[in-house]
Image (tube, rainbow over all chains, first blue to last red; front, side, top):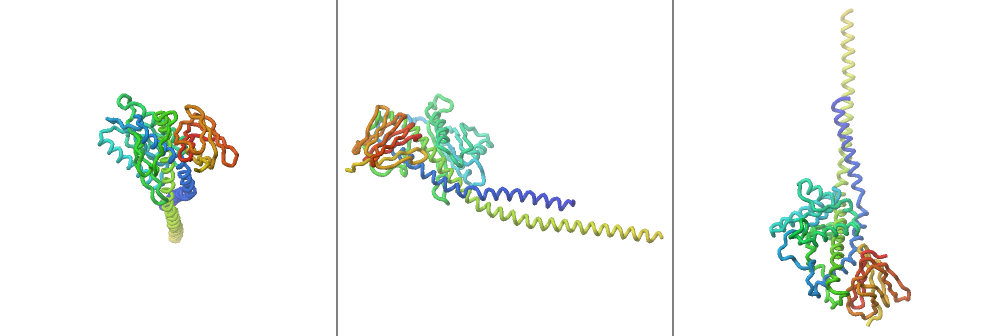
Length: 305
Length: 85
């Protein structure tokens, strides 16, 4: 086989392999995005109810609780960044990582050291490549998180928060979370929020006056058991929103995949033409070589007679 | 005054049950409580166990709540459970 022809064949093979990948990516996640959205909606009654309860306790009780009172001299902050496990989702993961970097810079300016907690292989790879320290990482569930996953992550965060940052190596004074808010199919915004010490965000606070609750057994106890649940619910909600955003971003990338598949088709077609031309040219050349050789032989033997 | 309680049982993943009820009994850290319409606003920590709801249509519902809370205000009752079945 001629060198030219071999090169064409090789390129065709590689384009065909790429086409298979882009075709597969095109088919994924069209139905998943709807499911992910429904899960966000299904989890909101619980999250809303918890937010309402936590707000009520925090507002009405005068108890100083470590989870609600900011440390006077914060030393360290934990940053939880939620990204995707797989690529092909446009700038989705990068946007969250960048938002996280900005948050880290802002925290450093306040004189805090930061501890990175990462969800999703993309963030882990990003940090590992730059040899940054990772305090905790979880992968493998970014596109379909369960409450158990959220609990696992929150447990680690709360454990670090409960430790005294002044004395313990990996204790933290603040908990921040970076996730991608799912606004709509077209808009997803990376967002950084402080989870603890408690900061009830205006938009999340329930409207209307809160009733004067009685607490059973008492406000402190209620807060004690309420806050871990609150963190879990927040983390879970962030994960679900991020998952929905991931699917939406991938769906947008899907349109790019569609044109990538079309491009691959086009490329294969023109490469086939070129390869055919090369093959024909090769055959033509071989024929003319044989004919030329036979001619030379014939004229040589004719001359000798 | 409305004579019924509007009840919601929610878990992190979804709303498990919602409807009108006459009475709810649950066990908090301090002991059993019964909630009737007109109950004062309450926020309580539940111990793991059964919460039973007397539904307005005369039937009753029971949920096994793990790691949960009850919140009562204006005849609205929310029962939150980390796991509910």
